[in-house]
Length: 485
Image 1 (cartoon, rainbow, N blue to C red):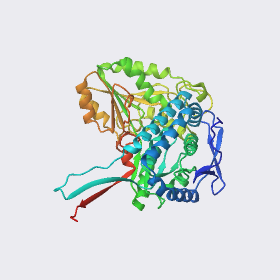
Image 2: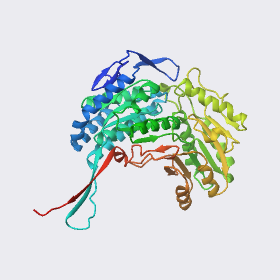
Image 3: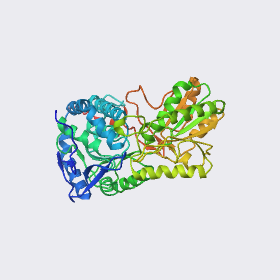
Image 4: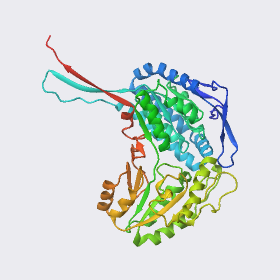
C-alpha cells in the first residue's frame, strides 16, 4: 500500500487533481513552529465555476444511482478510512496542531460518521398520508437538492468533512467542498480516499483557497442548490445574505459558549477531569468547548481548587509528542486569544492559572491553559467565543439562577449538567436554551446518531446526526385520485 499523500498545489475537480486556474499557491503552516507544511492551490472564482459545473454534470446520474449503491460506495470509503487511520491521524494532528491521539480520535469519528450514512443511505423514505376515501392516495418523496456547497473551518476538519459530505452524498446530492486554507490537508486526504473508493468524477469536488476568494465565490454561486456552512457567527450571517440572493436553503453551524453546570451533589471525581478536558481538548478550539464553569456556591471553593490543579497538570506540546494539548492553529488565532487574556484582568477578572504569563513551550502558537475567576456576566470573555483554552468560573445559588446564567449569552449550542438529581437534570434540560444537553458527561459519548443541534446565534443544523439526511433533501408531496377505467 503506497503512502497516502495530499497533492501539493492541486484541487480535486471532476475526478482529477489539478492546479488553480491562476497557477498560484498558498502555504499551510505548522502551528507548532510556523514553518510551511505544504503548498495548496489558491483557487478562485474560475475554479469554483469549474467545480460547480462538474458537480452539476454529475448530479443526474448520481441521483439516479440506487440508494443501496450509494451506500455501498460510502461503505468502501469508510473502510479505506479505517485502513489509513494512522496516516490520517498524523495528517490531521500536524495540520491542526493537536496531539496525535486527538488526530486519531478525529479519524475514528470521521470513519464512524461515514459508516453511519453508508448504512442510512437506503433507509431514507417518504411517508404515506391518510385520505378521505378509497379513491385517493397521498404520499411524499424525499429528493436531493442537487449541487451542495460545503464550507468548513480548520478546527476538526476531517470530522466536519464527514458530517456534511457523507449525508449529502448518501441522499443523492453532489458536493463542492471548500476546506479552510489554514488546515485543508485532512479533507483533501479524505477526498482522495473517496476517489479511490470509486465515487464517479464530479460527485465530490474540493476547491482550496482563501475564504474571501474561493469561499465567497462558492456560497454566492448561482449554480449551487444548497449551502452548508460551519464557522463564525459573523461569517454565517454573510453566507445567509449570499444564499438569500439566490434563494438557496442554508444550514449553519456557528459558535458556542457552552457551560458546565456543577451542582453540589455532583460526582466531582467524574466531573472535574471532564471539565478540564472540555476546554483543553484541541486547545479549546471547538465550538462546543466547555468555556464557562458554573458552580453551586456551597462547593465552589473545592471545585475551583480542583479545576485549577487539573488545568495546571495539562501538558502542552507538539503533535508528535502526543501530550495533552497542542498550540493554537494560527498567528491570527493566537493574537485573538491573547487579546482576551490581556483584556479580562483589566475588566476585573482574576487569573488563577495561565494567562498571558503562563508557561508554554518555545516557538509556535501556544497559550497556557487559563482559569479566570471574579468574572461578571457582562464581560466580553464571558459572553463571546474565545476559541482557546480559557475557562471562566461563576457561582450560583439554586436551579433558577443556574439556568439564568446558562442562558446568559447569545449562543445556544451545548449545556452540560452535573448532578445526581434526575429531576433537577431534566428540569434544567427543559429550561435551558440549547440545542444539546448532556448530563453527567461532556457532550454525546455513548449515543449513536446524536444530532449536533443548536439554537440562537449558534445556528441551525442537525450536524451529522440521525436527521441529517433530511437536511440534504427536499420533500415532494404527491396527491392522486384513482379514476374508474
